[in-house]
Length: 106
Image (cartoon, rainbow, N blue to C red; front, side, top):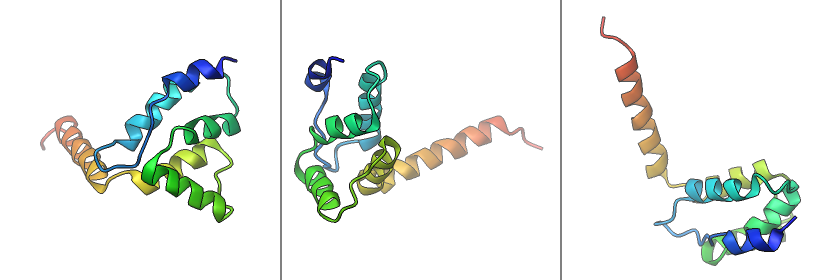
């Protein structure tokens, strides 16, 4: 496994309002996909590029003994902490528009 190559490709995440956590997670998963990494390795690699507010969030999890043990749990906790409500609302509006296009008028 060439984890040093993967770590050079990872973009940092600070948890700022102008960052999209979903896009960041997807970019990580693209890099991890062919690396055959365990969940623990994925969490370690992802947490190694956390900075600022995001790093403080992760440190607080560890201090409280709530460090995620699976990649799915890490992603869900990260999204819960940093996904903006605007992002969720935008997805909801897109879904409603799609439904309106797909459902014929009666």
